[in-house]
Length: 251
Ligand code: NAD
Image 1 (cartoon, rainbow, N blue to C red):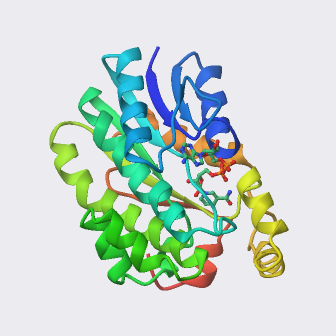
Image 2 (image 1 turned 45 degrees about the horizontal axis):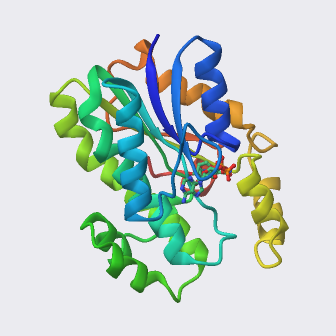
């Protein structure tokens, strides 16, 4: 039985990852706001410390870490999006990575919007660990900029840090989902400002439909598994061809 630490496992993609791991007999320690083995708010220093100490109190070793908790662009606070999507995810990994066994895995949850965000001062502030400054920088901008920028920084962080981990036999990769049918995306569709453009975006997915959470979970389980033993530092798009459509010559 493998043991995984998963944030954001209460709903959506995280819940699908949890179900798939439990179905094959693994143990999953879930950190989430209200429904988790550990209830903690990953937007705050205190919540992040509670999450990490809570997982450590339940296990001495891990086979994998999946920081899935995240907020979408319908949340009207760009700073909160930044705190959860980037700093919450990175802290979760940094606080637990020493528990990983050789051969352990980390799967970051990015987004196919990440490559479309500019690599600007906001991204650099996050990568420099300057949380207050990054939140101040983005505070007056559109929540979509915080969303895409935080995912951009998260994928850069993964690429920069996977190398040292690889030397210890730990493989870190990321998935970049497109539009997935979850409570987060329901809120984006229901948003007065974002709803119409998001609906059009969904209708333009090359394979003709949006993703189900289980379709992202399947790929996460692949990256956690033996068949992915030589994959390190990769970003795997799960978006029905949207990234290929929008950026055909970039890979
Ligand atoms: P969701 O809203 O269904 O689930 C997110 C989970 O994170 C919830 O259980 C929520 O309680 C938890 N969470 C939120 N804020 C938290 C906090 N401060 N502390 C602890 N837990 C917190 O969303 P989802 O669509 O399943 O998203 C999961 C991940 O996938 C996110 O990182 C999201 O950015 C990413 N993603 C989603 C989509 C999509 O279309 N749904 C696309 C690309 C990437």
